[in-house]
Amino acid sequence: MIVISGSASPKLSAKVADLLGAELVSAEVRRFPDGEIYVRVDAELRRKPVAVIQSTCPPQNDNLIELLLLLDAAKDLGAKRIIAVVPYLAYSRQDKRFKPGEAISLRTVSKLISQSGAEELITVDIHQEETLGNFSIPAFNQSAMPLIGRYLRGLNLKNPLIIGADQGSIKRATKVALELGAEHYFLEKRRISPENVVVYPKNLEVQGRDVVMVDDIVSTGGTIIGAAKILQEQGARDVYVACAHPVLAGNAAQRLREAGIKQIIATDTIEKDVSVVSVAPLIAELLK
Ligand code: R5P
Image (cartoon, rainbow, N blue to C red):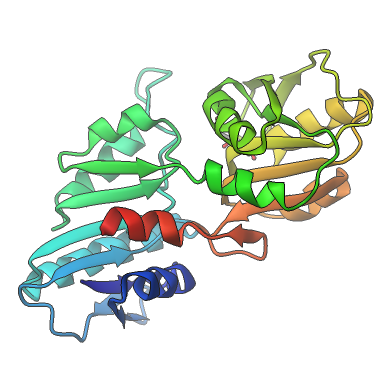
């Protein structure tokens, strides 16, 4: 197998290639003066299975186009079986129509990837697993939550409580809690706008305990900050955040620190300073 690294996932691609003992190819990615993206894959791919690894993290649209161009180039070079590995799949939260006229963005992104030469898709902690049905190629999701649970074990947390940041995160919180042998709950939230959420308080027994808030994505940090405030008021000792995808839009990391979050624990589906857990073993295993 050949692993082609997109420019959004260079370290993760290298780790996956290493675990597979596969050749790693870094594509040439440049910009034309007008901003269009140029991609070239300089490798012998004919009749070889190929994994293209590229997260569609910010800048989402550029990274998505780069992914599509890489898949197209691999097809053009005669690869035998092309697998799109998209550790963070952008637009996955826009998977329904809430108001008439709203685009179901995930459906369009799925169509683009399905028609770009990829024969299979692999992703990590997609927002809602059932939305993989939008792809017309086989699509697989792996959860990084057990790996996060294992990382948390090493932190020696005090009487830890794992909390799903909202109802959608119950399953994720359960997976983390199982690894830790800890209790878990979830909070309820309502999103008023992309930037504003209201988190409803619940009386949880957090007094003197370390609390880990679990979510798939931390973007503006609004969900976590709202929840952390409630937990701190109820006497939690230290509040941690664990997520698969550290989007951390704008100054979210700073806002989380100012809100008294002890540590942000994230994976390398998006390569950031907080990416202390690698999903490379999950991806390598699926590729095998
Ligand atoms: C939404 O349902 C997701 O699971 C996350 O809770 C959300 O994307 C987090 O976004 P933010 O950090 O902007 O509150």
